[in-house]
Image (cartoon, rainbow, N blue to C red; front, side, top):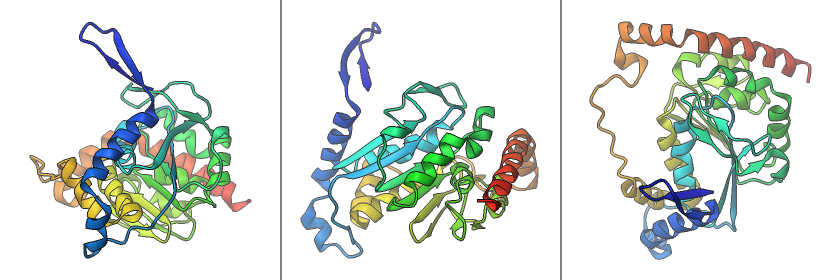
Length: 279
């Protein structure tokens, strides 16, 4: 649930997540009319019934990896978006933000429209790609999902379940090479689409990924309108958003800071590789 609080901290009302989704969907629907989409060049929205999105969350996850795509999914309308984990226990992100799951793994049926996994930077996140319950869930619902997707190191978690073998994919640049360990072909792009596998690069690529998904599910013009609604017009104060643009000195400092993360993910990718080789 989302709780609206007064200035004195008292809760005024509880709003169910489904209600929030309906409201944002209605806002988007007011501007993305069916007639406009039908008449617009490049819009190829596919008709659907209620679409089901399961977004895997876990301790040590990076909030923005999930929040940006969730914003987009919630604005599509006629969409049920669930934040899923082993149980409904609150999970803490890598910066200490508490997130409440809306469903447990065993409450999610197969036949999803979108299966999504975000990345993580906390020590608790390293072992997720080999967690039996996480792997079991992904392997149960992944094969029947219309789209299997990720942002940042979430691709390694998908890879740990064998869901990226034979697919082109991307992830955060510091662990890009680990995709090959898990049977994927690493591609250095912001968002990589290979059949029904759609993967986004590091953290902020979640918005680009989300708009790509909006285009897939509702058409190009709907996605353009969402981009304008959320005023996504990046003009960063520094031109250092990629390894090449940042230069060797800054890139080296980032790699040094990420060394424990890379080591933990590399170790678990090796474990996953060995496990997948026997499955």
